[in-house]
Structure formats: structure tokens, C-alpha cells
Image 1: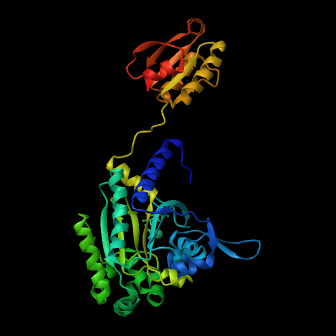
Image 2: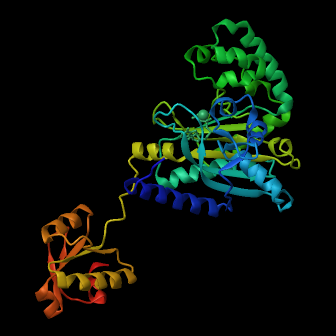
Image 3: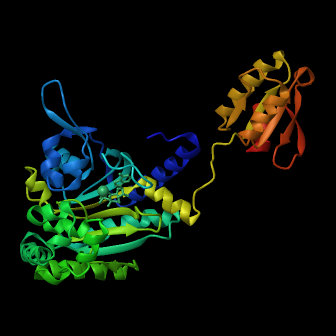
Length: 408
Ligand code: ATP
Ligand code: MG
């Protein structure tokens, strides 16, 4: 994915804010490799998920090992904390990442084959306080960036125990209506009936509308956990809707699942996450609970655009120093250097163009001030400093300190 300067400043602004929000809640950054052995995702994401079945970029290396570009972050983080002994550290373990991921999907608005996520994972905290903290963190990012259009949708899909009954009820329900399901979902009926609830086909959605709901099958523990979370969100003034159709597309979720959605188009989920209490042990680690989310940066930008909160490009130069003759170029070059040392965004002419062309360039870049250096200016060691916004000129000595005093 190409991100050019006219957009990259927005990415930098988002990343800076995200890092600040994460640090305020005690999350440390984790960075992990671009690819992993394929088996990690087969086991960690689930071999009945679309991601593993259809969307991974898998290749064989020179040793004949099967490797895959990371399609998501949670399995990578879990692999890393097990391998690096972090599971033995003081709990909870709070980690975040800002990384790119790869999925062979049909490219469309809000869906690309390389995409970026801000992800958060909290390990070793079973209580709904951890779920609430993770949700608040996502909510704080939206708040800080001025995004108001997102809606939080919440559900609980139960633990492995209560999910057994639910799964049977779901299977019975869909078996009755099998003929109406798409071919993929006919297969899912045997492998993973829960996935049918996540199908995007209109006919499957219609059938799923009356399907049994996870919340009606929760065991006492899961029910108490879910009620606890709702209470904590209420107390923090976080609005949410309980939505029984939020099941998420990955196999590892247990209990809480949530999405922040916004009206940005067909791909409306800006952030999705939940609890995954069996993932660490299933990947060879100790019994350690987890809860986290992934927030898509391009969809976040789409929500910011919709809400009109994209900041202005801060890269415009404070000053452009034009040179009207060859002898002025060196002075312009040195003055630019001195101004930069003072913290001023300064540029001078590098292409040897006419004064008119230089001014056109300065205007296009949105320079706040300009100075034209010619023989007279060099001789008198003075020049006109022009404010390009209001057209006013001030006479200044050709000294970086003097210029800086006026333009800063
Ligand atoms: P969706 O239902 O939108 O495909 P998902 O369930 O596959 O999402 P996750 O794997 O949970 O999504 O990823 C979390 C977030 O990452 C999504 O909500 C979205 O913002 C972003 N995301 C996922 N896949 C893509 C993609 N191909 N292109 C852009 N952003 C993506
Ligand atoms: Mg997807």
C-alpha cells in the first residue's frame, strides 16, 4: 500500500495519538515479524475461518517450510509472549501494536490486501474490568481524534462450556433451513455453525435473523461476566447496543465480543475485538486469559473524514528563501540551514529557476513567509520579509535570529 505525503501526515497524527492513549493506560509496544510458520495461524486463528481457508499469503521457503504473511496480530503476539517468557511476568500483561497485515481479499473500499491495525492485547486479567479497560481504550482513541460517529456493539458468545448447547441449538436450527443457505454455509454447518451468523450473503443473513442467540445460552459465569461489563460501561458513560449478531470472524473468541461501527460504507467495522481465554494455552502456553481488539487505520481515517476531523497538513514551510541571482544562492542555502537549526521549517531554491517559478513553488507549498535575496539585499545585509497570507512586508536584517523573532 502506498501512503503519500498528502496523507502520511494524517497517519502520523493518528499514530502519535494512539501511542499517547496506549501509554496512559500502561500498554507497551510489541513489534513482531512479518511472517510466521503457517501452523501458528491454522491453530491460532482457526482452520475453519475465511482468513485461514482463503485469505492467507502462504509460501514455501528454501527449506520447504510453509510460512505465511501475518493476516492478524493476536496469534503473533501470543506466540511471542510464550517464546519470550512474558507469561511468567507480573500480570496483567498489556501490549499494543501498530502493524500492517496481509489478507488475500477482494479489494474494495475499506478492504485492501495490505492493511494497518492498531491492536491491543491484555493478558492474565479474567475480570470484566479488563474487557472494560480495553473497550475504553478504543473509545478514548476515537474521542481524542474527534470521531463521534462510531457506535459500540456488544455481545457475549459464551465460554467453551455454554457454547456446546448453543452450538447444538444453532446446528439444529440451520439444518432445518439448510437448503436456503449458501454453499459455504452448507459446509460451515458441519465444521463451525457459528460462522454462519457472520456470513455476509443476504439469504444467509435472512435465515440467521431468527437463529438462536448466544446470550440466551450463557452459563452463570458468562452471564455474570457480561452483566459486569455492561455495568462498568454504564458507569463510565459509554453507550453501547447489545447485538446478538456480533460473533466476529475468528475462532479464538470466548465470552465478550464487540465492534465499533460507523456509517462509512459497506465495510463499516472500524474496530473489532473480544476475549480469548483459551488461545494462549492452545498455542502451547500456560492457562492465561486474554482480551483485545484490532482497529483498522484506513477505516478510522474514513470515519474521521466523515466526521470532518482530519487535521490540516502541518508540513507547509514557515519560510521560503528565494534567490534572484546566482550569488544569492549560497547565502539562501546557509540562512536556510541556520533557520532550521532554530526549529524553523525553511526551504530555499534547489533547482535554479526563475524568481517567478520560485514564487509559484513557495505558494504551492503554502509557505507562510518568503524572502527574496538579490545583489542589493546581499550588499545591504537586509531584505523584505513578506507574509504570504496578508501580503505585508517587514524589513529584516539577514540574520536567522532576527527572522526567527518575526516568523515564529
Ligand atoms: P471484516 O468483517 O470487516 O472483514 P474482520 O472480522 O475480518 O473484519 P478483524 O480481523 O477483526 O476484522 O480486524 C479488525 C479490523 O481490522 C477490522 O474491523 C477492520 O477495521 C480492519 N480490517 C480487517 N481486514 C481489513 C482489510 N482487508 N482492509 C482494511 N482493513 C481491514
Ligand atoms: Mg474480514
